[in-house]
Amino acid sequence: MNSQFQDYLKNNLDLDLSPKEISDFKTYLAELIAYNKKFNLTRIIDPEKIWCFHFIDSLTLQIFFRFLKSNLNNTDYFLSKPGFKVIDIGSGAGFPGIPLKIIYPFWEMTLLESTRKKIFFLETITKKLHLQKINVVWNRAETIAQDRNYRQQYELGLMRALSDLTIGLELSLPLIRPDGYMVFWKSEINKNEISAIKPVLKILGGEFLTLLEYILPGQETKRNLVIFKKVHETPEKYPRRAGIPSKYPLNKIVTAM
Image (cartoon, rainbow, N blue to C red; front, side, top):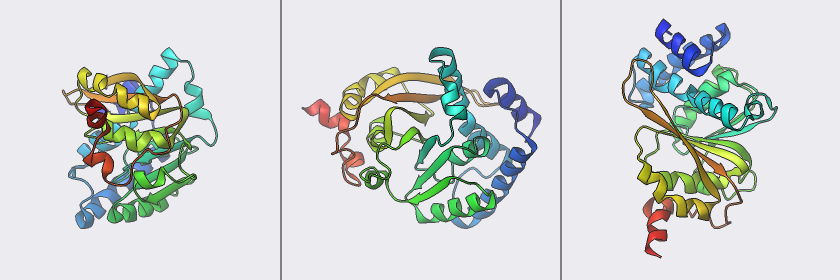
């Protein structure tokens, strides 16, 4: 990790990684590059870019914690509560879940992924890093969200590389407890997109909390954390069965009614 990244973590995210954490990230990096030659886990293969666009981008969740501390004064709930339950939906090669698990080892983390080759990597890297209290689940969000072992069990949900907020909300909010939060990483967004999903949020039991902009080290393009709060239980019929949320997004159904 170069000095620019270290300065960014310290000055922008209030993070000063320990020697063990840096060692874990280096192991993660090496394993990701090695497995990527076989399984095509990520298009980003340059080590410096992996640090920037995968590891540091995952850790920008700290910006949300800063927002909570400034506005709601309840950051300690996230940073120190034993057994705090987090789910990374569509984890892929482990982003953002594993970088966050490295710095918050006491979190109870579920990595949800539907692609078998990615599950194999997730199982391998979690063992390699000796991560505890982490559950790798090979399934779809539409399926496990109807399972009582997962439905409304999480205080924090994470979803990265998202294209459509409406679909993401239907897949994720049923997994989040009332008073919990759902965080989406989104490279581009406009304010009209937020306004358009308000009817969908009402159906699913969520509300828009805030949009937090940031710029990664050495980059110029703004990125976004889009934050929602779960305010009441999601009706049992959501999410709809596998494939339906993407084929018939809720915002189009609501608009047509």
